[in-house]
Length: 316
Image (cartoon, rainbow, N blue to C red; front, side, top):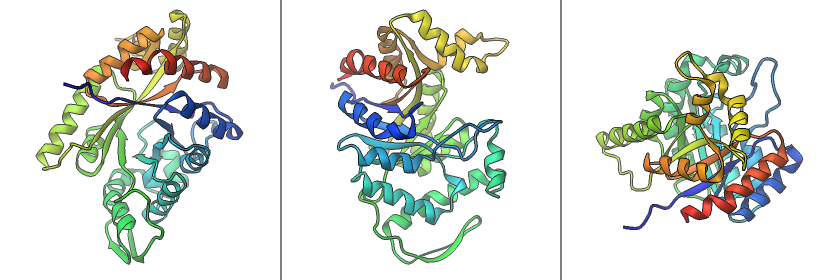
């Protein structure tokens, strides 16, 4: 039996806006399959600088030829579905059909700030996503679309050109909750959790499969992915220290910062990374989007190159 096809993506992390095209080209040259970036309208207190995902991905797509670009994630309920459908179609055209559309509703601390400043009731975000997803596909494939729903109402919308990909870019559903798993199983083309242990990853993949089968869906073309933090170094102690610095905030009375960092991140040498990737493959993951925990751009490039040379070939 042939081994499953595994893809590797990398996140556009601490990269200056003027260096996005170069980053994308280097990732493509190193053999990565996807470039991923997320977004926040306002993040942190005080707010930290963040770019929106879709314009960044358009820039990355315009600078490359092969690598796919993926939003990981767009906070969909902050947008009107007609405008979001138009933005996604635009990126898909710039990318020549190389766009994967990852969406979420943002469940992290501070979420309410983004919803409040855009006058979107935060308690409606799940309902908005559920109503929006079928609408996006209609807007990508039909003309003269009219909708009168609970959250959205509009008449006679025709968005041209429609996306290159038919019936539209794959929609990956991100999240950590049972509701997100149900959304992925019934409305999405992929499941894209983050900050999951291997055990929870396996359980979530099994849950998505079970929910999809119960609804009569065919998952033969479904994407099981993960947004995966990584701290890779020839010095495993240094790699662990960086992971603890970034993920230690999730420590509890029962789990130390080091234990949390090891459980949530690919941490250590490239050999440690290979084992961690295999564990996630065994849990049902087929698409790993690596978010390198790094101190600056050069450290990000160093880790990208290490993984490209010593980890990715192991799975090809």
